[in-house]
Image (cartoon, rainbow, N blue to C red; front, side):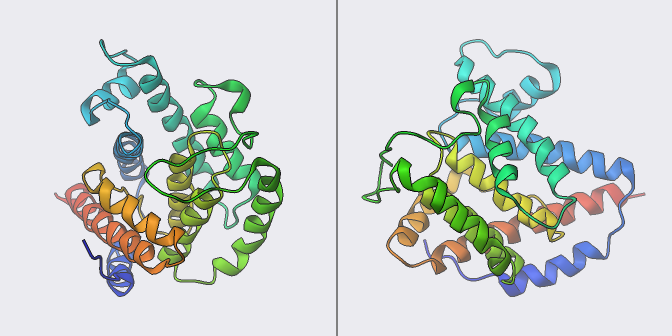
Length: 250
């Protein structure tokens, strides 16, 4: 499926969202908890986590283990929720550092494999479904430093394009043994929150399209991925406006 560039539409909805601000503490809390469940479920589901959205809600809000589901799936839900809290904390800054990225991965992954959480991989990895080969472990520290150093210039782009490129660059480096996609989506959302955009969810139902545009980027064409993310942001903005209007209803 071909995705059109929605950056102009993103700008229009961004202005509509701004007209609803400032939000009060109750509205902020309601929206944060809504997206905690939605982003945790969708990001994990994209990677094969078997918890449904309602099961994810039960795990996070009630602390209940779902019978018949792998323990790892529960660890991924709770870890992502903790990383989500860090995401909101970091959103108060206007910079993104290497420690921020490592911190997001650490919180997501430490229950699964504590010794590799928040640390760069020391082994080669194979990415299924593509002929793309990430850099070897020996190249990762320097490659990540180059990426971090490029962030100030990337931030001059349109905020949605900037967020997309952060996501794309991180998954291309593939610095961690596991959890790269989820860390990249958290990083993308950090950039969006810092620019005043709402949390953006990539629905698992379009996972095939997501993988396809990532594959295009691995071949040197980033525009399909930017277009895809701009469409996801646009849909998330419409949902965010719906939520704001429901909160404003008298």
